Amino acid sequence: MRALAAALLLLAATSARAELQAVAAPPLSVACDDLDLTSLQAALVQEINVLQARSGPPLRFGTRSVSPLEYATRTLRPLFELVRAGARDKLCGALRYNFAWYRIGGGPVLFTAYHTPTVRGSLSADATYRYPLYKRPKDANQHTTAQILGGSLRGRGLELLWLADPYDALALHVEGGAYVQLPDGKLVAVGTDGHNGQSYQNVSKLLIADRKLPGGPPPRSSEPGNPKARAYFAEHPADLNAYWGRNPHFVYFKTVEHAGSGKLGALTPGRSIAVDDSEVPMGAVVWLRAQKPTVANAQVTGWEPMERVVLGQDTGAGIRGARIDVYFGEDAEALAAAQTMSVQGEAYAVVAR
Image (cartoon, rainbow, N blue to C red; front, side):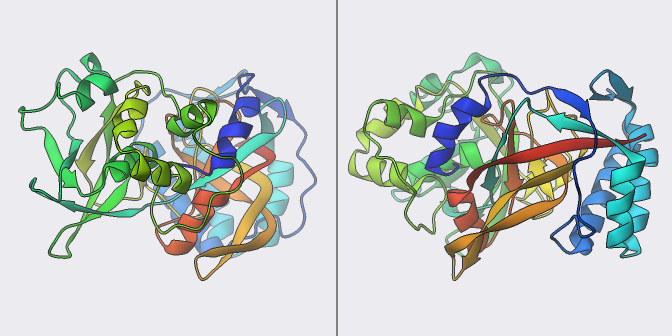
């Protein structure tokens, strides 16, 4: 679950559907990317391998359509060669002159962040581990969240794992991937396996609307999700299923090789983003400019400029319209950023001319 302030900015960011608009390249500095190029190289390799193997559908940039193979060959590979050579200045120059730019959204883009959490769980249920993550059933779309919480999947052998904390289960439905630490210390990576096709409703926004959740920045926390919502449900446990049930969207899970995985495979911290794939082509190169938190000892100590090349490799139920979720990784710093970041900036999808 994202920072509480995101709930307030999201309404403005999604009031109008984002559209890719052809524009001139924005002013870029010689050092137009604030991260090490090794991470970008890894993300590009991941993307090239995926798109080369795809036959469709095409990536759409405004009125222009590009096949996955053409995008991998003419957009991703030239960028990869520049990055592999460590030529940051040439990379920035190529972006400016060799690529067409498409603005994401008709105004400011809302930037939030996400991470891969670790939670306590077990392969079997007992007095401690009572809250299941469910595998995808054959009739996945025939169950709402309220029905599932009421027991509609119970007794069908669909429980993948059992968690110790009910709010962890809710949080993972938003975070997607996670590492589940078993009682013997072993870590099991889990990721999403589709959903029930129902619309998404942010539970924290429901609490805010009912004046049960205060405003202001979230406090420090080492646990996934919204710390204020977690605290509220700890004090009012009977309300958790009631509010969760008001979000019809329910996510199913499976074990995966890496918990930090998106729609196109492994995610790269700082380089992978979640987008609304009805607006931004999945797999597209995106250049963004915003602010990011600086983190020390798992605490946010300030803010600094963030401008870099990223890749659309994931989606999310709450990622709609002009909103981008930046993947920060697995550590405590990533968690602090995910719980704090909610800023406005600009973003552009790029494609070879």
